[in-house]
Length: 423
Ligand code: FE2
Image (cartoon, rainbow, N blue to C red; front, side, top):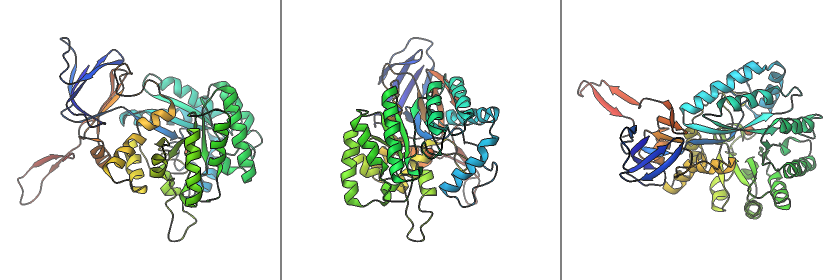
């Protein structure tokens, strides 16, 4: 397959991309190709590596309204609601909903997802279901599972044993939730236990960390400490980190270099953070999202996650990582050209780095995975949440969407004016 005349995310224009089997064979201008090669004219539109969601909950997705709707809209009511739903979960329903979401994801050019899976149900139904889904979708979507002890490994009597069992079953990443343990001390202890477990097993770590408006929730400091102590540099991720929004500036000026030293990745979940945080405030009401531009400026790798789609915590969403980038850009006020491009990176290359996707990227020799967008560049892609015209996985087209076009019929105009949403 030859894609001609594409714009790339790094600003290059008029570029051809040639695939050979499942690999990218060449990238350059005016590539010559053998007779019979399938050609797709990109027409000066953006060809990007696929979107990557660094933080999701596929066991809960598409369960909105089951068994009821979250009335307060808070994180804690969401957790309680999920607890009500868990006993009624079935393998069949979990698999069905997850596969449906993966279909949505592929259509949106989202071809890699790190999903947390709750291990606090002793039956480990969701773990079994998502391990099955991971296998089913493997030809077209990289699914990575995190053993997530929703109720806390010290607060819930069976959570740690279940977490270890789920790792034995093939779950990829050690999760945690220190701010939900009973005390700050227990939270810190949970971070130590889980980091040591990951070090023993040679696994990455990705914890829900400080998803709170409490500026004294400082488990990220402990996470960076144990990451450094155990030599887990580059393998550990702090998800959410919303308490950082409310922390004292002086303390953050000490914290960021510690995170940088330990090479801890950070994940913000803009749609969910702006919805769930600040719920106990009157006015002024805090945004709650972590300090994305400051983290990036400190040399810390930051990805954006979708976190939730139609579940006990969030009633909206569609698997569109451009919607996530759009919200992140607004909440963090990242409006310069460079910052907007950084928000695009947060849903592509930065998140791929968090997942450790070795075969990712628009480079010769990498797997031929990419998305053609109905936009000229990454800023326009975010502005329009641009249509994914073609999604390619391993050299094969796996999804097509017709370009968005409106046909107007207005008074005092020619009877029919056609325009595309790009201009
Ligand atoms: Fe989460």
